[in-house]
Length: 311
Ligand code: APR
Image (cartoon, rainbow, N blue to C red; front, side, top):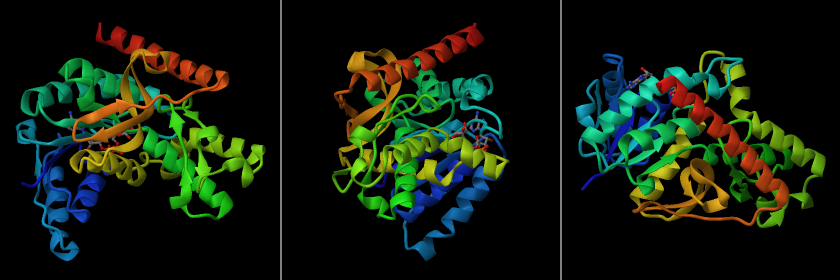
């Protein structure tokens, strides 16, 4: 039987997700958004591309969360994107209200779905969804690390000229300026970065990666990145649907791993038919652990802000 994929939020990322799913013939799609007509229009437009793509997927749009019933996977992009000069954290109050509504509807209508959260501030939105739904930790995950590492990989490819396919990067931590790119666990075809680039160049690339989302916001002026975030979420959904057991950096719930408790943090996880099947613990040196702890502190402060806002 075909898989059913729910996309909550049919804006820039949601629409792109629908197109990727149809292009890859991953399953049927329901796009749900609060704006009337828009998800229906995007779904019909994408559906009409399937004869040309040679892909049998049905796409429908809806303004009713009930249509999420029976979804195997739900990808959430509902929320407001940032504008130039804003940090992801500035979206906390507006997006938490949206996430509260979305999470309780998903709990009611699609309690078995594997949930991938993209709305920002990412680590807090995935925390909130987990808390409201009460779903097992294996069923809830946030997309951040794949995007951050993809940015890292792109910048390394731009610098060296080598194929993005041969460039492997690891990034841990929260999805923001406190993220922890790990050049020590990154390489080109298994060869350490230092073979190809000076430490100064690597440091500059790490810094550009940290600010990678903001760079796009400043250029677009009217919203944030959507092609690469959508591609990243598709990689996670595919690993789940096909039980690929890929090792991917994602925001996962930690209960003692990396010395962190009861917090969603970007770490390498295994995604397969069981959802988030395992957290992989890397050996970190003192500096790396310190940066990860600082990133966790930042996320905790935002969770405290969230709790204050919720009263
Ligand atoms: N239920 C469903 N959809 C909603 C809801 C809701 N309660 N509230 C808002 N939306 C929809 C909006 O109507 C809009 O179509 O979410 C969509 C968001 O789309 P865009 O504004 O185009 O934003 P996008 O670029 O897709 O980013 C979405 O992901 O990366 C994050 O920071 C980004 O938080 C932002 C989110």
